[in-house]
Image (cartoon, rainbow, N blue to C red; front, side, top):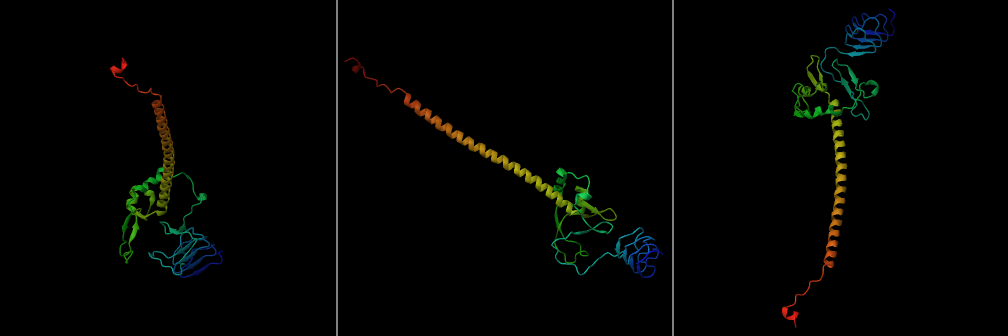
Length: 232
């Protein structure tokens, strides 16, 4: 064995590891499947997996997790998410980890077909029956499968609310742009109406002026004399 700084507590813990270093294994057969060269691993009650390095595995087969000592308020923090393989991670937004970046355009219109609902989780999940609000994964999958995460059997399991929020933002920006264009159009129409009103007023004044001049230029009415006055 050429590995060093390994700690193994439990029957057959790190059983097959020969040249790996800085491993910690606690429990029966903990880390026994890591292989000969795995290094920088921590296993607590977990067999590990072949090829592991720089990996932490805690528990195996459990379905509930309770952790004490969590800080109650964090001003600057990233939410931790769990993938289908129960691996913890943080979603990244950096362009360094993205490809095929393009505007969403009309792609966000799918959310207009979503149907938000109110509901209660089943008693085994939430015995308190707290009122919940959200979406149903099966219904969302019918609208856009990309908005749903499946379980290990491939069935709809959870909704990617982060993606839904991004679509909502895109729809908001589209509507905001439309409102801005409409506002500019309305402003132009108001200017045209105001100009038209001044023009009509000027035309009415001009007509009145011409009418007055015509009245002044008419010849005075002649008095019709009786015949007896025509021939004295």
